[in-house]
Image (cartoon, rainbow, N blue to C red; front, side):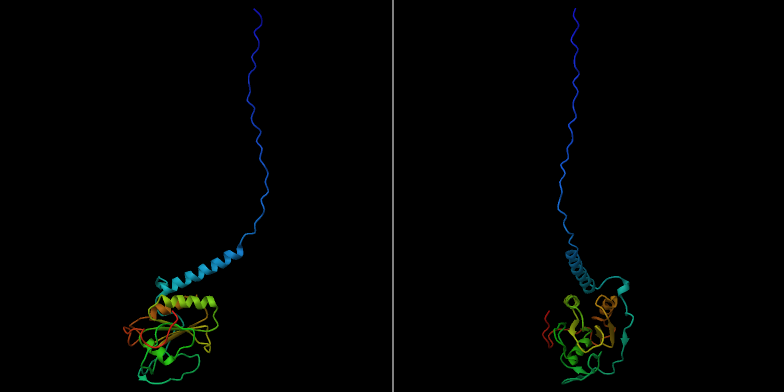
Length: 208
């Protein structure tokens, strides 16, 4: 017998892996847009936080720095009642018609606003704030039943919160004492003489 032909063992060749090198253009990360968006979200969160009461015991009670003033009389009088510029009264004689609660673009007559304080409203006046801060205050007022927001260019502090017999001055909208003051005094029967009275159908045309 002849020699049998030798069989060749087939070996599989592994395919050579080829990776195509691609160069992608580098895109600049939109930090600016993210910053603007974050600012808007933060302002909205602050407005909701204040407008819904803030929550928690840290936002309850009389805030530090609140000054109380004894109100001797709350009689109704007619006509304008002068007071020092930028120093909103916390009570006393006032007009027989109250000011509608809401948001105003111009200073409001104090003799009518004081009557709203008698109904347990909180009156927030401001000067020198940014447009964003003013919008935050307006959003807050839109979520409250008894709150007045109006500019007062002659007051010293950026923000002044006034209730019947009490006031607080702060430098910034995001000061946590703003929440405390509103929570403590708005609609409260502990301070105002007529807390159950309404804050609408008076005078004034609020913008929101």
